Length: 151
Image (cartoon, rainbow, N blue to C red; front, side, top):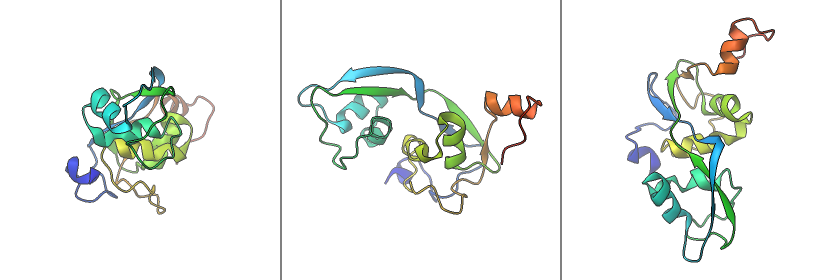
């Protein structure tokens, strides 16, 4: 469903050069849930697409599979969706999550933001056919900031 919405034929392969949204967690807004709000409705209001509700549920540790239910009074993190990354050879969703969040297991949030239906992280590590443009940390390492190359 999500792959089709973003015109992705194979959710395990992402074209080199494709621009991916990387949800931002550093400078986020907050929202207190009121009666009648759902994750679907919040995603539609905040991002223009109800299918992006996992971008809200993952960082807020909401495990209830029903996007029509969210606890009234709960304060939610509202991730930003304005950082883009251009895929380069060797990228995987897990590597992107590690680079951007320090936690490879957060790959599912990147998948959700980009309408990639397969959120398993692809055990082979080849979820994407490319690698991201270097983060500032990667550029520092590559410039000889005392760290070895990452793989």
